[in-house]
Structures are given as C-alpha cells and as structure tokens.
Length: 248
Image (cartoon, rainbow, N blue to C red; front, side, top):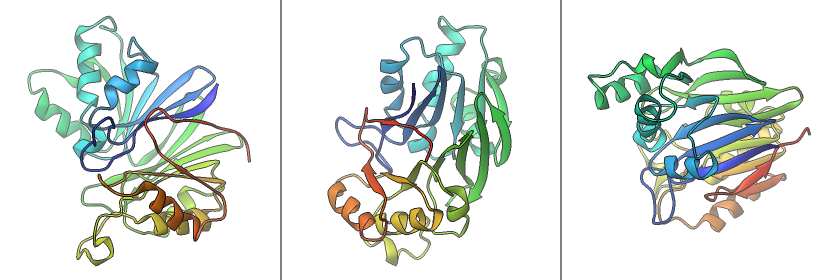
C-alpha cells in the first residue's frame, strides 16, 4: 500500500473531533510520520496500535506540529517498544522543545536524531528538507521514491522555493491557514488557500492537499479559492482521509 493518511488538519489548536498537523505516509510497509501536532497521536495509534513507525519527520517546533511527539517518546521509553530506537528528522528547536518536557531523560535513548534542513536516505525515500520562512526555523519536506514525489510545506510565507519543493509532486501538502486579515498581517508567515493554489501551479503538482486550516474557517471556500488558480485536483485535509500515491 502506498498512501497518505491524514492524522490532523487544523492550525494553531484543534477543533472538536479534529487534530492539528500530522500525516502518516505508508509505502510498501514502510511507515513515515510527518508532524505530530495536538491530538494526532491517538489517530496514529488507531492505524499503528503498537506505535511502531519507521521514521518521524517534524517540520518545526511549534506545538501544533510537534507536541504529540512527546507521547510517542514515552511509549518507546516505557512501553512495549522499550529498547528500540526511532529515527527522527527535525530542526534543532524541536529537540529543545522536547527536552523542556523531559529534562531528566536522555532523548537519544529513544531517538536517532538527524538534523534538518538536509538530505537523507530514509527507507524507500530520498528525503530533502529546505528552510522556508516562518516565525521559527521551518523545513519544507520532499519525499521522492522513484518517479513518485510527495511534498509538504509545514508553515510558510510565500517563497520561490515552494515551486522547487513541490516540483511535479503527485501530492503537494500545503499550508492554507487563511487567518482573518492574513494578507494584512505585518509579519505574516503563513499562506492563504489562493497562494497554496498558486504555488502548486508553479510547481506543476498533480494534486494539492490543503491543510493547517484556521479553526472555524470554511474549508470548501478555501478549496474554491485554491481551484481558482490551480487546475489540478484540490483535496481538503480531513482527519482519517486516505490518499493513494501513484506515479504521474
């Protein structure tokens, strides 16, 4: 099975029945997690009851993208997976955030830590992490397996690197926060849905998956705004949505 499972789709904080940013990528038995924000761990465990995954990639240190990594750490530290290590790819701020939650534990007893940005071979994937503009260091992530590419922005301001990151991607997962007055924010570092569509078009992506919705926003309206500038398929991230991955 080759697919993306949506674990969470909200930005900032979860709405009732939803979770913040998180995705499970499955590729012929290899399981890779992209971000673990608020309320994503229970959803991950519904698909992987023992918590066993092959790699975790965290885009940045904001809690709506990383806080449930703490729960996964504790499962490996105290639970049935005790003694196993888990490769973790992240920016340095993620490590500092988790150390603040576990000041008396050595994170390296659970995690093999690989710093992003950078490029690595991760199971079937060539993983590339590039810095994108945000309030804290944030990496956009590209996963390439043969002819199939999946890309994910994390959170970002518009940047020309977005076209490169998502180049010819089968699925491009893009921040579409749409906070009220987003375009008027003096120090904005998040995208609108229309901007998500624009950069997916520039990238030549096949499908666009909108995510990181501001709580309370109209998701169908966001999708319509993205479709106004993107001619490919526009998908709305919904918890437990499965998206097959295939070559273009």
